[in-house]
Image 1: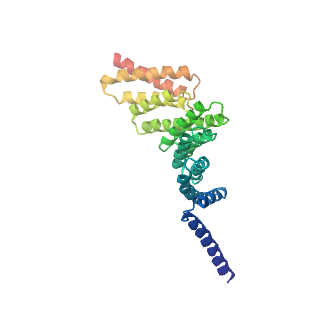
Image 2: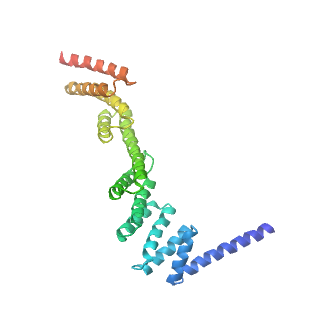
Image 3: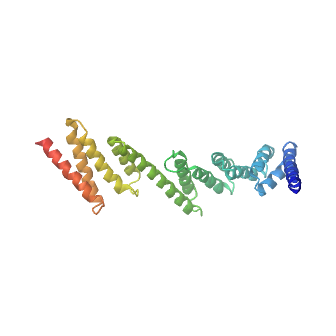
Amino acid sequence: MKKSVLIIFISVVLFACKSEFESVRTSNNPELIYQKALEFYEEEEWLKAQTLLELSIPNYRGKSEAEELFLKFAYTHYYNNEFILAAHYFRNFSTTFYNSDKREEAEYMSAYSNYRLSPNPKLDQTYTEKAIEGLQTFINTHPRSERVEECNALIDEMRRKLEIKAFQEGQLYYNIGQYESAVRSFTNMLNQYPDAEEAERVRYLMIKATYQFAKKSIYDKKEERYENTVALYNKFVKKHPTSEYSKEVADIYNNTVEELQKLKA
């Protein structure tokens, strides 16, 4: 019996809350909608605040309240985990209120919203690249901002994702025996990220890939491709003279030299 009374009480309260929100939403009273929007925002009722803020914005365009409404509207999307829309509305705020003292904050939040969209390295990295671009633009625009250090840290984190993504793509080609594509992919990776953590392993895999590619090539292409293996080996030993892969790459080099001698005999 007590449980039934409690359920009824909760239902009445919820219905009353909903009725209050709906009555405000449909009231056509700009001042009431504005005030309740701010109340819901302070109470972290993000969806209700968002709905009422969206209704309020047209009524306050060109007025002193507009700036606060626009910024809070962007934040409701952010707090609702609607990061694509959040990035859009923060960017919109910074262009609409160009002289606002909140412009720096909005530009940072636009880039940070894209950072929140950045997925793990196995997935498409479009938003990672957008976030890096946005954070770098923020640094260039606000070089003295207290947020610069954090922006640099976020950029480093996301560049690391891109490095891992590039390495995984090259390794996939290698694992399935697409050695020419593996070398091309690894070469692009080293051009973009010469100091990547995987750089030593990448160069090691490139030697193995070119050697296997040369072995499987038609006769007329073998010499040229074995010479590519030798060139990669020479670069490897200069960059990594004490590598854990030294013995293995030396064996590949010796085999390559033997094959070249046969071809030139």
